[in-house]
Image (cartoon, rainbow, N blue to C red; front, side, top):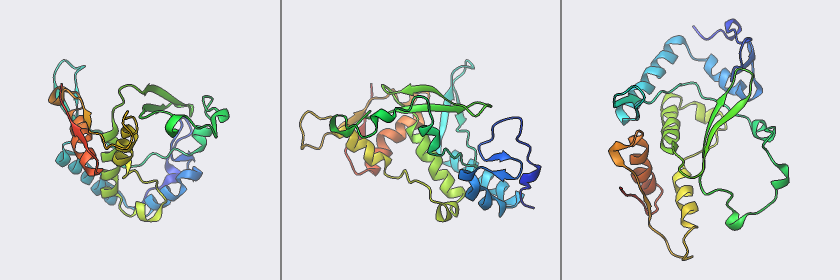
Length: 222
């Protein structure tokens, strides 16, 4: 049994995939066609595979608000979210006057972490722009890796932008800040280690990502 998108009611809220029952949004058409070929059993098996992968990899975060130090498994939806380019171009904060401008060293911001949420009226809100202490990179990278494990065929049939080189780009972007051009600097990540609520993030970002990039990014501690 495959998904009956015509029976999927999405008129009372904004849906990422469908504009109306049985009518996928243009950017999501290829994804919904791919999902059409999967049965309920297939989706259940792949969801279970994702949960096992997250548990095996130890992708967790700590919840402090409940008054206890509790490690929770990272919540993961196996259905990918698609954000078209037009979302950025139509944003009221988009400044076309900046197109063509070249900031120093060609870098607008060395690193930025933005938290996005879409409201029921189709408005994307930026909950916070973290320019000083961005976080969450490792979760993003691991999300993609889990998605590749769960839906390997998806990456063969749909043109999905790759993020594999992110660690390398991060290293070289930070390396350009060195006051001694031409040298290969050592970049250290300061972290409270296991006392950080997202210890998985700092552990992976500081160690695995740096060495995976082939650079000299290494973890530190404070």
